[in-house]
Image (tube, rainbow, N blue to C red; front, side):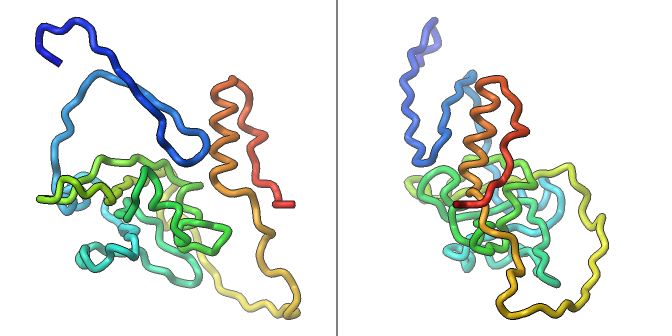
Length: 190
C-alpha cells in the first residue's frame, strides 16, 4: 500500500485441501532470503534433514537420518517436494499407519513451515522447508535388542489408528471451543 494509506483491505481465501484450515493476519513483515545451507548449518541445531525422495539428488550434501535397529534418527528439519502447504508430509514416508520412516515425527515435534524459493526460478513453488523442534532430549534412552518368537499369524504391531488429520482436527476443535483436548486420543479404525 502507499505510504500515506491509513486503511488496508484484506481479502483472503482458505484454499487448503485438508480439514481444519485457518487464516491468520499480522502486520506486514519482510522475510530475508537465506540460502538453505546457511539456514541448516548456522541457524538450526546440528542434526539430520528429512529429504523428499523426489528432490534427493538436488541436495546430496544434506545428511539424512540414520535408521538403526528399526529406529529412525529424529530430523531437525525437512526439505520436501510439495504442491500445496504441508503436502510433502502426506507422502508415505510421513504416514505412521503405512510404516513411514518419519511417521512419528509429526506427533513428537512442533513444525514450522518456512517460506522457500528455488534460486533463479521464482515461479517454482513446490519446495517445502520445515523446521522440526521438540523439548524431548536426543539420545536420552537405551536401546536393547532381544529376540522374541511368535506365531506367523500373531499380530506384531498395533492396529491402525485414526490418521493424523483426524487428531489435528480434534485438537483444533477443542482449542476453538475451549474444551479439553484430552479426548483427542488415537482410536482404532472400525
